[in-house]
Image 1: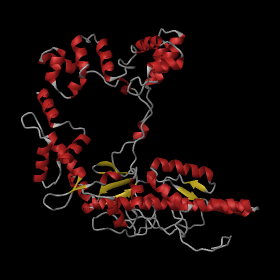
Image 2 (image 1 turned 45 degrees about the vertical axis):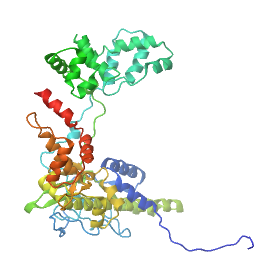
Image 3 (image 1 turned 60 degrees about the vertical axis):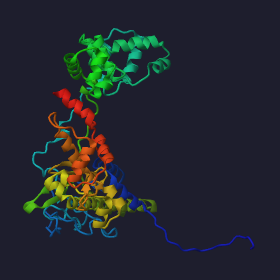
Image 4 (image 1 turned 180 degrees about the vertical axis):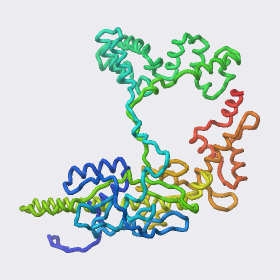
Amino acid sequence: MALGPRLELRQGQSLVITPQLQQAIKLLQLTNLELEAYVEQELERNPLLQRDDRDSEPEAEPVKAETADYSVDAVPDGAAHADMDAGPTDLSPGERDSGDGDSGGDGAGQAGGQVDWSRAGSGGSFEGDDDMEGRLTRARTLGEHLHDQLAVARLTEAERVVAAVLIDAVDDGGYLRADLEEISLRLGCEEALTQKVLAALQGFEPTGVFARDVRECLALQLKERNRLDPAMEALLDNLELLARRDLGALRKACGVDDDDIREMIAELKALTPRPGAAFGGEPSQPVTPDVFVREGAGGMWLVELNTDTLPRVLVDKRYHARISGGARSEADKTFVSDCLASANWLVKSLDQRARTILKVSSEIVRQQDGFLAYGVEHLRPLNLKTVADAIGMHESTVSRVTSNKYIATPRGMFELKFFFTSSIASSSGGEAHSAESVRHKIRQLIDAENADTDVHSDDAIVDILKEAGVDIARRTVAKYREAMRIPSSVERRRMLRAAV
């Protein structure tokens, strides 16, 4: 066969993810805080986008909301499959007041069947909710407290430099997380100087700071109280025996009787293993729910979006008409056209994101209505495929929706991922049990133990659960117990005897 250059035409099909689709996927998995930051960037970049800061919206015409058999207001079937070629959708309020009077009538809310997402529920719909974020104030950090003490400490200039480095190496709990030899090499000083400065810093408040482990932290606090005697030092050297509640071995190691060992343990309990925890750091961000669930009339569960977490943006058509008419060059016309397309797509993507979250949340509520009504024991096994098949979406879409999204229910606030649990077969051949409900039953059995009854071993728990219809292996019980940080039956028995 002769070799030579030639031209060929081939026709084929391939799946291409457009930039618009990539944006929609990205928005779907963002948290409400990340979404707010993203929209802020778009508002700065796109002159045709405008924030809507109006306090109230005109009432939209009510439409009949579809209601499923599980008594949760259903999401319209086309919610997650909005027509991307249609006009820009209206996301609280969309383009309603900036255009020529067009209003997007595609939105659907759950509360009262309103067409505007701003009517789909509100963060203030739950009575008694306090403004946690408004109460957050910045507390003094541990580092600031230590630097203030360093300013009045009697140290030389060289010692102050070493002290400043050591303070920066202290974690939020008050422990020194640095190697003294490494610090000495980095600063070019003798390790004896670093040791001397550390000894001085360990006298700072709160007592116990600059310790390198728990034993040293407790020893510093006992030393200040003049209680660091040989018996207490022996107790600190055998903290692992204390963790196992092996009082017999502790008495032998410390050379004391039962009354003395109990008093020594009580003294340790009065100490602070994390002395720096009393000081603040960066204020924590309160979790804001994306969806609310509340009980309605007739035992219905009403699913509502929290519109406080939904960005309120619109496309300014009047400004677009003004600047597009003044555009002369092709570059200017292209820029204006791209801005309009980007703004329309962003509003539409935000609307579709809200619809998808509501649709997935409604299906989760339908699947887990027993949990909402009766508690964690009635949590059903659930996976992504079950929800995806029920609402006609792909599993990856459901996974993105449920990541870092929270739902406020009458039983508390949960991440949407909480409702997806593995199944454990029933010993009677009936409906499978949720792993979360089985863990709850194990904790209930262990919490009911007392000194007058036998402590349940893992094998005993297996037998009790099988009598209740749960077919579970002993290693699974041990895995769940360890995940809940519950000690073994031997350690629990020692703890109960010590408490008596």
